[in-house]
Length: 87
Image (cartoon, rainbow, N blue to C red; front, side, top):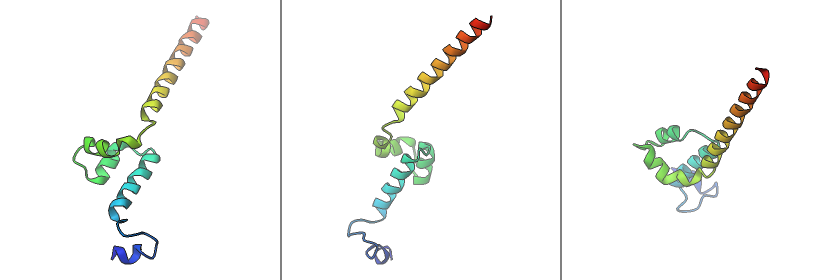
C-alpha cells in the first residue's frame, strides 16, 4: 500500500518508511526536541541507542551548553558587582 502512494509522489525504489523515519527524527532534532522524547517515540530501549544513531545530528548542543553556561556566569558576576556598588 505504501508503494502505491509513494511512487506517484516521486519516492523511488528503496526510499521507504525507514528513510521517512530518519527524516522524521532529523526534523525533530532540528526543532530542538528533547532527545529523551525522541527516544520514547522511536521505541528505543535506551537513550544510548538513540544517541549512537542520531547523536551526530546534535552538532550545536555542546556549543549551546557552553554559551548558556557563559551567559549564566557573566550574569552572576554582573549581579555580584551591582550588589557591591549598592552596599
